[in-house]
Amino acid sequence: MAVGFGDFLVYGEVQIPGQVSGQEDFSQQPHPRKLLTPLWPSSLGITESCQYVTLCQPKKSNRCKYSRDFLLQFRFCDAACERPSDLVLLEGVTDAKPERPAYWPKHLAVGDDPHLEPFFPRSSGVIQHGLNLTSVYSHFLPQRGYPEVTTMPMGLGATVDYIFYSAEPTENRNKGGRRLYRDGALKLLGRLSLLSEDVLWLANGLPNPFCSSDHLCLLASFGLEISSL
Image: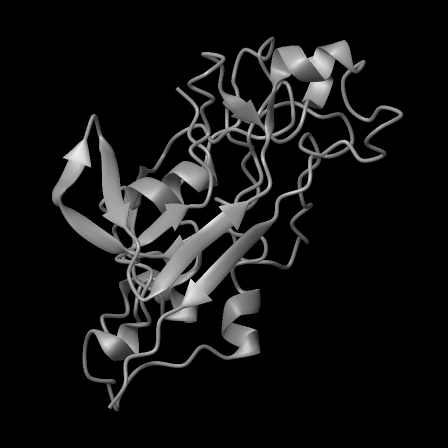
């Protein structure tokens, strides 16, 4: 099942590798595109808990730094010149590969250096965050029995737009796989209602004469409770 980044923000984690939902239709592709680990290079210094390494461990004084010349050695390495077997074929894009110059070494000798840090450290396959975020919207219309939608790509209703805000977890933190929250100092006062797919079809989908965008507007009002000292 495809997972959206909105789900990642709400549930707090996402499994990688995995297929992430988007606005492109790859249902007929034999090998749908998937996110693979690592999502970002280790040089950014960000852990799988979405924190900077400096917050998790002391900074190494003897940490190796990679020069431009060192990184250029990998431009035509074996991995860079090999096309993955499950890569979606796009003529002129994914079928192209760099041509290794005759003078370029086929194998690099830097891999055996014990003082060099790996470019892509071993990954657990789970990206997490510790933010207590909840959505302004319930994403379901109980009076109609349909989910709310924010857009209609390819004629199908979908929710890809969100407003998240900080909240406090309840004692019953998890219900049906969904984390539950209540308002803390930041309180949700009101929101602009969303519509369901069947209602939008009555208005000829999106955009239409009443909504010039292919996305519905999201609007929320908040109040901040400031405690007296």
